[in-house]
Image (cartoon, rainbow, N blue to C red; front, side, top):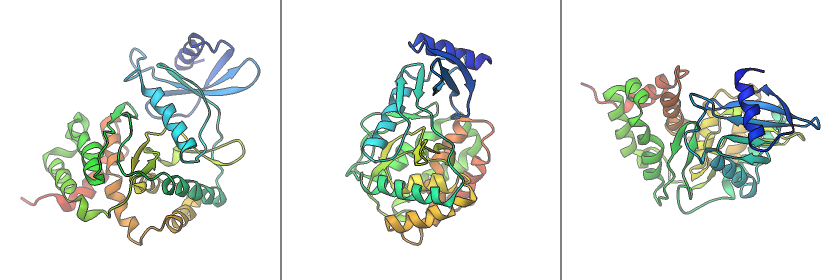
Length: 298
């Protein structure tokens, strides 16, 4: 085993899962180390933990908040999520999902699942009853009746204090982002809040053992549904996903202009990537391109 998987095995045993006999590396989120833990009876569970530096998570509630988000998506929104085996300070242990199948039929099923989530969980307020986490950064979810103010303050402007964002954008682009936020009511339609996954890039879409679409790694809040849609749209979904977008738009009654709104709605995710990861996989270039109309000419 590697140092990382040995670390996970130690933490699993310390948490009481002493029947785990081995941990193999597994693909997981960008912020945590993931593994597939084999138990003595031959079954496996998925485990992840923070091991950077001293191995401390950014807060004691990271995995508890994630587990709560998974439960909310499943119980309130009817979306499949992994079962929670353990959600502790150091570890999150979940049932094992499958990679999603590369078929149009799967993405059609996902369009129905996401549309159901977004159309059956509407809320008069934006936010969530607690803060949660996007990677290693706290996501502030203070309730607000105004979706434009909530999105501006807690999803866009909150990243301007991050050192990597300051360096990547510079003064002119940071000012442009503030001007964009002032104009959000002109740029985006009024939409209700609904329960959103909050970090819905394509790799967070998986499948249950029976082939049903399932979601992992949420950062839930009540927000505009199109924030989830924008994340799928702009994170290189596979070719077979093309059926998803038209069907989702039909099921939810989206207008024809929804594609034009995607770059603005995806700013939050790009800013989060810039703040936490180096390299940023082109996120800074995309942000600067979206902000170009809002920069003042010298």
